[in-house]
Image 1 (tube, helix red, strand yellow):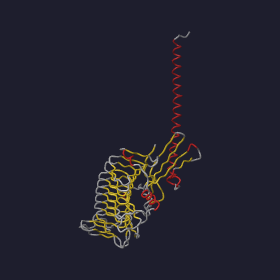
Image 2: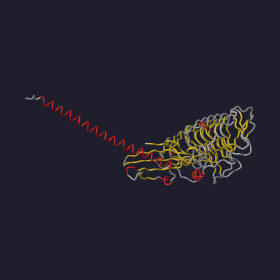
Image 3: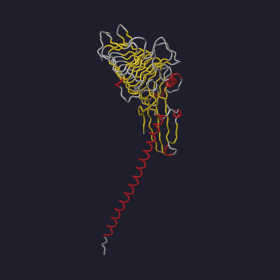
Image 4: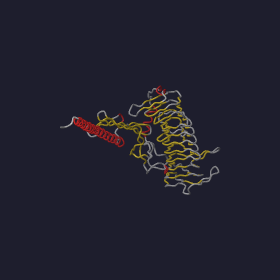
Length: 421
């Protein structure tokens, strides 16, 4: 006969087996859920990547207003794509969704550089030679006047650089600069000339972030001189002014655009933004603009101004991106870009008028200009470079340019990831 205690042992063993079986069932169910979740995530990620590739490769204007469709004709592969003009670059947003599961990425994209057009220097031919003095370095291909390049003794400085003068192939430049892209200029003109409504009260908050998946947020100051101070602005925002906007060092700007008559950036500012003016942009000393930033002074067909268009960058500043001037109708005073001493520019400078490079200034990239200026206390020299470095080889091979600039390829690539989930 079995003892009564054996029944307890059987019950305990059965309970343990039941718990183990239940655990296996729960584990299998949990594994199945995680597998399905991972499968959906991978599928969404692939669909988002496919959407990004479509935006990079397509010129279809329907994406400007947003377009939702199925990649393969199935409800499980739906994507929503949108491409927006954003200054000298473009912004794309790719969103993939399966039922309630959604994955998206917002990014800026720009053009690869056409190596056949790329040059360290493009200086138009005005029937005068191009002169170098002091510790000047020019490395990369150069388009220079037919009169050539020569050494010069200026301001008690003889030429001390490479005896080849230009370390790269030399080509004869044309009478005018290669033209900027008309389509991109027209898009910039729409922002400059249209009366776009905006609510400046939104800037009363100390931090404003607008997603690129949402409509653009505008702020207009009309004829009020406004100072951006103790504020953080990020994302899909555009600021307008009919007069001057001052950017204090306490302002933090990330990816936003500003359009004004004049823009002044105070010493110590650090950010990433695109600034466009019709009159002037002044950047004080010790400022830092991260890639991809832009400074542009544009005077288009409807602009009515009598002063000289100017971009000024103070000493010990650094800038990464694009600096350019453009004037559709030639005036008596050519647009001017002034780069002070001890400044490093990483990227491109396009000056439709004159470009003044200060002592120990460095451009890692490319310079297109109608005329170089070197200024001393008593004299102004034209088409002279003194103690200056222009090195196209120092620019990263991953650098992307705007289609605005004449060295851009049609092929577009991802420039910067802005948002993702």
